[in-house]
Image (cartoon, rainbow, N blue to C red; front, side):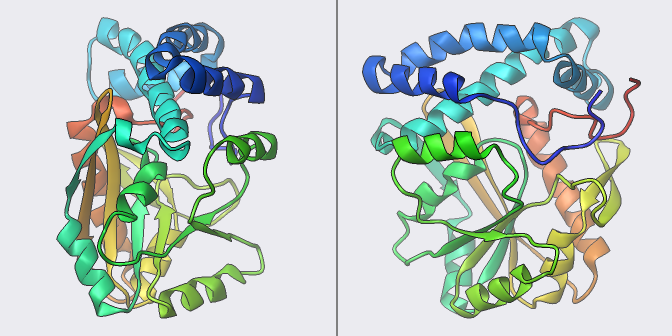
Length: 294
């Protein structure tokens, strides 16, 4: 059983090539059709992640055994849809999708203040397409994404070769903490720093807080940064609602200087709120709560 996130997700270049071919040559529906077989495969052959989905549904959401088993397939299918959508939108098919921007005024207020801001999201929904929504605001939005850069480099290289170049600047987290200087420089330019707050890597600093009725570990970095940099902090999620419609949520939160525990508490409450609305879009496929037996 994978008890901790290892810094990268499953997948192969071949799998992505099949989806890209379907999207570009046969249309989105064909890609979703192929996804039926892919999701079924993962149900039976991705044992550790399937166990984590079952645990989430059965123990954290208190669903019946049957519903929890069915949700293994549903979770894989919805997750696959978000990957297909991301490729399609980044390949110039943005007009095939509709969206609702909930909280746009809060983001605009941050940009007008010209101090920059921090957006904390999670591995729920499809946050990676948020830049395509932000680009349609009247204000110019410069986005920097804080990342470990640990995903499969061959998959990333292939996706970049078949999609439009992203306008998002990547800030790589480094052991020497030089990324902190890049963050400060970006904020001074009124840029938005995006980071996820729900996955920590083994042997890095973490914080503990309750989520869905049981304590779990969260990365300390997002909450230390958010409570010390004296800039606005928003929780942002991009959630899939129908096959071609997304709902982006942006919510500001009160931040007390150097009180990272309070910021984590607000984040955990926000994350529970969004998961209660979209329970199938939890995509942390590992032993998040450290409650599974090998």
